[in-house]
Amino acid sequence: MAKTKTSAADAGRVGRGNGQQSRTVAVIGGGVSGLAAAYYIRKLAAARNLDVRVLVFEKEKRAGGKVKTHRRGGFVIEAGPDSVMTANSNLMELCAELGLTDRMIGQRAENQGVYIFSRGALEKLPEGSGAMLPTRVMPMLTTGLISFPGKIRASAEILLPKSTVHGEESVAAFVTRRFGREIYERIAEPLCAVIYAVDPEKASLKRTLPYLARMEAEHSSILKASLAMRKRPGNASMPTSVSFEGGMAELVDALAGKVGKRNISLGVEIGSISRPGGRMAGKYLVNPLHGHALAADAVVMAVPAYEVGRITAGMDGQLAATASEIPYSTLAIITLAYDSDRVSDHIAGTGFLVPRVEGRKVSAVTVSSNKWPKRAPKGHSLIRCYFNDSYTGLHVSSTDARLVEMAKEELRDIAGIDEEPAFSHVQRWEKGMPIYTVGSGEKVSAIEEMTRTHPGLFVTGAWKRGIGIPSCISESLNSAMQVIEYFGKAK
Ligand SMILES: Cc1cc2nc3c(=O)[nH]c(=O)nc-3n(C[C@H](O)[C@H](O)[C@H](O)COP(=O)(O)OP(=O)(O)OC[C@H]3O[C@@H](n4cnc5c(N)ncnc54)[C@H](O)[C@@H]3O)c2cc1C
Image (tube, rainbow, N blue to C red; front, side):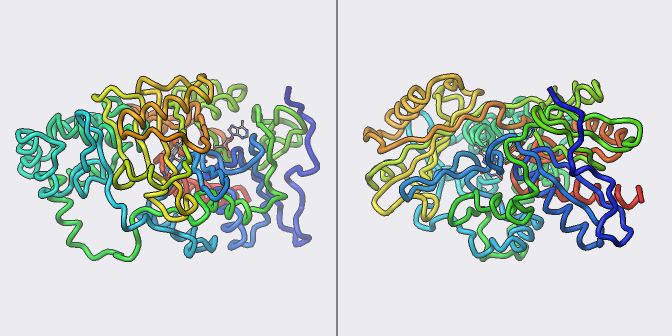
């Protein structure tokens, strides 16, 4: 049970002997969102000469949350994300500030292309499909993935008028309306299932792929919009997605380094927050499951939405109930390391995706050693298999041995890989990814609205405005600015 005794780090002290009030901010959750929030609060406070102490509470023994890199015998194994998109300027600026720009690596040039397992064979995804849909007419017309009538239907997208749909549309409805059912089933559905771990029939277009809704609104057609975008000058030298030489953990390690070890409490699970009265009125008590409570002037919750629900349950039942309604999917990443580089020859390009209509268990396979440099020692291969519970095969409670067996069976059946791995790595992510369902945007707005009734309380995280790391960083910058603005008003 949480104790209400407060620690020596109580807020409200007079700081630095300059008569300025010292403030304490508790950041709950030490994933990329929490670490970025802590980093930005410290940075913004320093720029304004504010005396602000930031303390991060992380329940695990390591910071980083889903961003987790496991290194073994020269292999670099990503248990969570394996890349970041570079289009987000907040991410790029942050990486520059952290000294990570020179650590960024692009994909290996010699193994370009993603394949789709379709009707029993691996077919190359048409070029320009990275944005979830084919954005170029020629590759779409020449792909073996889509039937001739399917190609005609998809090409007609350029002629279709813009939407007259009222209300929120699902990703499936949008793609089918614009490009036809076949493009949806064979291309958009597997991409959506892997990147967003969500069933596109339930996924909100506006929240999951807002840029597609914008492209249609502004150009009346996705193909027309893509053509216009290709004509714009861009930064040709920067790849669209990158990783870091030593793996994605470099990002969270660098952030944690800047926030400072002494400001991050690892292995501390927060059970609740409450608002004390008396001399501490106006503050929050941040109550760990074990140990002393901390009195804070502001709290940033950077935990999954269901944890926001659990932590606020005693303080605001309605906020807690709404946060607990945000759905999550469960994932597992099974990585197999091989002593031979011939294994990766079974799979061309960087790997393949599996549409649900194929009825397989695995939803995607990435040959990490083909995709990135420095992921496996010379002469070795590293293959990552991606399972999620919206496909049939994942029972997260299965033993590691069973999950590894399942990955091996899928690689044997789909890619003909019969070799025994030298070792394997299993990572389960139970309730690992928020699902942006139709209607979830209203829930997020409602949570924000309810949070505003608790001055000094802020929320950030992947469940708000984008699952990808760059969106988490932008959202945390936003929360940090709100904290500083709050301190400005509360002088
Ligand atoms: C398998 C997988 C692949 C992905 N691939 C990509 C990709 O390639 N590119 C990309 O951009 N994004 C990718 N993502 C998404 C991205 O990694 C996540 O959205 C992002 O890392 C979430 O960060 P977060 O800090 O919001 O949440 P989390 O990483 O979940 O961090 C929350 C933290 O809060 C802690 N916590 C929870 N409850 C408490 C409590 N009560 N007290 C204290 N601490 C608590 C948790 O231990 C955790 O460390 C992927 C995600 C997964 C799961």
